[in-house]
Structure formats: structure tokens, C-alpha cells
Length: 140
Image 1 (cartoon, helix red, strand yellow):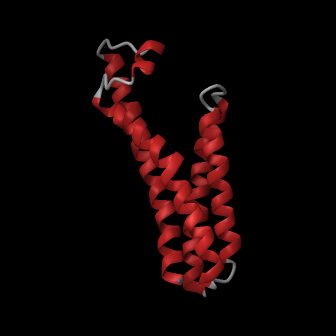
Image 2 (cartoon, rainbow, N blue to C red):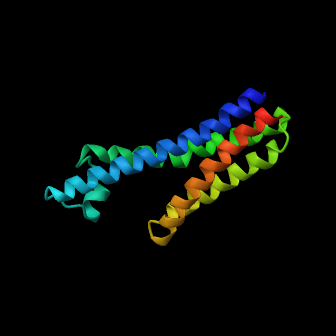
């Protein structure tokens, strides 16, 4: 069970890396699209069309952040009760709490842009907490 705990904790950290890669890929593609004369307005966004290929990065970021990471964090929290890792429940709860706040900040950033800055900061905290939770297994 300790191995499952470690894999899930490292998995959350890895998924945070995927988040960063996906969103920067999308933003870079969007920047190139605009630089080449493309226009992104409300109608473009609501059409859900792939006006530039890198827009897939936004989809990956959304699905990963809304479903996969929360599921991994919840699984980590559940496993933590059985893994008998010293401080494991506490750190799994910290990871789960950071994921919950991260999701709220991500959704809030659509109407409150400053929340996006905190969304980025929380990603670093979530990555660090996940790595620390995984490293707790080695100390056990």
C-alpha cells in the first residue's frame, strides 16, 4: 500500500507538469495564430472549433485539471488511511485541499484574472506538496 501511495503522490506531481506543458503549448499556439493575423473573439471561443492545432492544449488542461488530478488526489487521500506512512494522511489531505483550491482558482480566473496568478502559484505549491508526500514513504 505504501507503493500505491508513493505512485499516486508522484502521479499528482507528474500531472501538474502535464498541466504546465499543455497550457503553455496552447498559449504559444494562440500567440502564433494571432501574430499571423488570426482573430480570437467570443464567437471563436464559443464555436469550439480548432482554429489552431495547439488549442488542444486547453482541452488537455481542462480535462486533466477538472477530472484526472482531482481523482488522483482523492485516491491518494483514500489510500493514505491504509498505507501507514508517517504523516501520510496529513500530506495527502494537504494535496487534496490544494487541488480543490486550485480548481476553484482556475474557474474563477475566467471572470477574475488575478485568480489566474494565484492559480499558477498554487500549481507550484501543489507540485511541491505532492513530491514531499511521495518522499515521506522513503522516510517511513
